[in-house]
Length: 271
Image 1 (cartoon, rainbow, N blue to C red):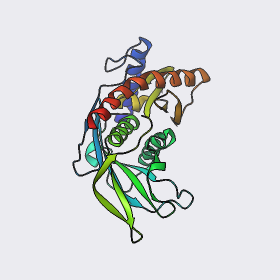
Image 2 (image 1 turned 90 degrees about the vertical axis):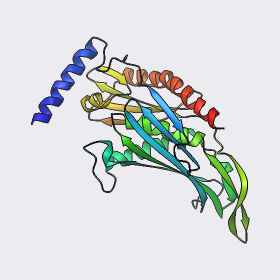
Image 3 (image 1 turned 45 degrees about the vertical axis):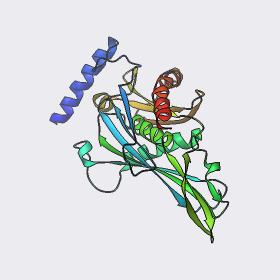
Image 4 (image 1 turned 30 degrees about the vertical axis):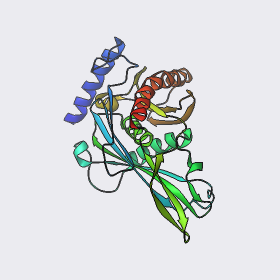
């Protein structure tokens, strides 16, 4: 009961500030939190990044290894993304198998990378229909303060941009590692997701934990380097009007371009 009263009071305060064009942490409605990216956070991974979006923190490690191709995609490599929340990230997180929220988180990040065709999987074939390269991006959330979608997406993108691709050759029908032949993982674009929350009649970019708890609905839109929308995920109990959807699309392109410059610099630094 006490928690419900506190939540209601927080939402009332947030709505009151939004009516004045303000937010609880002083940001503009279309302003994301400060983003910092540390590359090579996991030395033994093929690529890695630690991302802080405000006080939300996520780490992504990329593992690259030979694998069997999918039955209908023998001429393409594999990309798979997973996500996990550590119990220390938030008091509400418990140990055990991932719940629906964590499964959705992994799928949204995976879809943004996959549908943008960021990783050129056509270049990840060792022997067609027999052996390909698998790229596995594993994300761990270590601190939660709202909007995991974007923090995890940026961690995965930065880790991929800084991943090194080993080389394998088939010997006796088995992929054999070629020493000293690493190259940059082939990429074609830099996808950026922007998550927006609807609170009352207001749209805010990159909601923090208080705004996340107070939102009526949310939408995550991922764009590629050309500003094309490649993926979209809606959540929450309420909907968006057509005008609000258009506004969110425009915000995703504008704010995404700013975030992309930060991620692009990390890729250039890691090459």
